[in-house]
Length: 435
Ligand SMILES: [Zn+2]
Image (cartoon, rainbow, N blue to C red; front, side, top):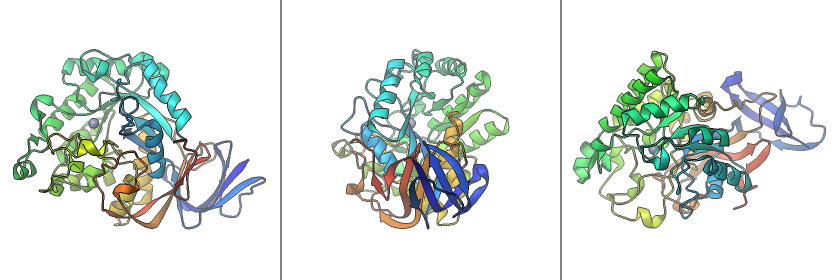
């Protein structure tokens, strides 16, 4: 059986494409692309996507699926469904589960379970250190053999410089990148909000920008020392971006990601309601930082958008600001936010969106590219640019509703997602999910 996707505006900068095309898929692979009306469908299904945009499937390289251990917040099935609903064909799962994903069998569990319960492609990031304790190297070789594509202690910075050096030395030998959550614990302490105006105004313990930037600088130095590819996670400050930019200009294999919440919110959004959905790690920074992040994303100094999708149960976020857990969900709102805030406003074109949300994550993780061209896996996202919608607490597929963007009016969202030619989302409805 074949599938013919007709009449969409197809956007893929990797093949210099932004035009209406028909795309023929067979056995999960794109076999032909051509001018509308010229591609023959001998036997199979045709789907008319006139008025829609078709792009290589979006990839979120920073999500917390919470399984095993915290299934009341999210599990692989519900997280996979949230990804599809948000337009993502693939995600990279962080290892801070319970138990921590720090051995080959735990990587295998994640990947095998994901194949059973979700149509979304799930990739595994293994822990750098046993139990994320930052003390002993995890079984990086074993996890690589089981299919892990990157290594990170996300949720914590690796505090010991020597330990981080050993981790990068060792990871490099397997050809995998180290993803770094940068946080100097002796500086950040119990900080919960950006140290500055917001923390002072609200009487909250400060989380200083230096607590992030110092570790970015250290990890860049260790990248230079070890040669291990380094990816800075959820970068939040203009100064942090300058460090990454300088490292790249010296030819170092350094990349970085930014989250939608650090792009489109700032510490100014924290008010006397003490909305715990705005409690992030790292925290929301200044409005000037957010503006610099948007400019750096458009310019390419920031390589990609990743959501840091961090589901938490309502009873956990209902605590006082100091006690509530860090994080916001992100899978279901990221695309709509980028379309509304950057594309519709003319700051970013669709080709750049595809580069930052589809191509760059796969490249950073050394995964095969997905292109709108014959021979590529048919992992595709279909977008309706005009669809207006509002982010609502009861509108999520995720098990958790701790979104920092509840109430936002957005324009544009994914309507269809294909993974290896099979729909995980069809006309806005989930399909193929067993949850
Ligand atoms: Zn993190």
